[in-house]
Length: 89
Image 1 (cartoon, helix red, strand yellow):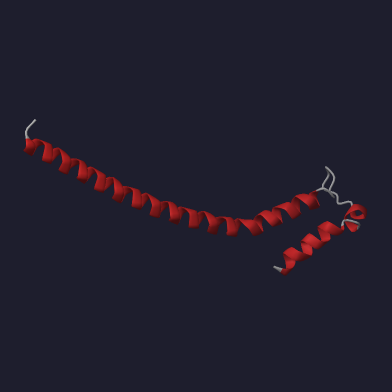
Image 2 (image 1 turned 45 degrees about the vertical axis):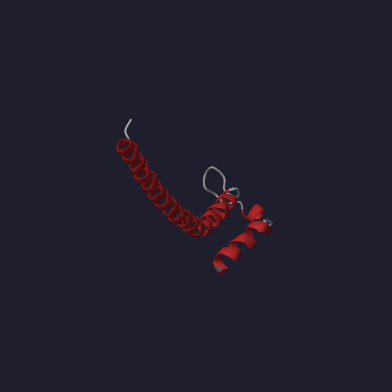
């Protein structure tokens, strides 16, 4: 193998390595943006999750005919407190 061929190979590999470094940096940047977006979505979902949990807790006081048992609801302090917290938000 002659010396010029070897230098060309080395130059080609340097170009490949440089491009891989650039691609890696771009992927890191995209990953950071996606992580920020995920955190933003989680922040937006959290209130809905809380409402959903309260709703499911409330459903425990309904029977299969959709009649609410007010005697069990009346004594459900944790549910009432959760509803109050949601209303205050």
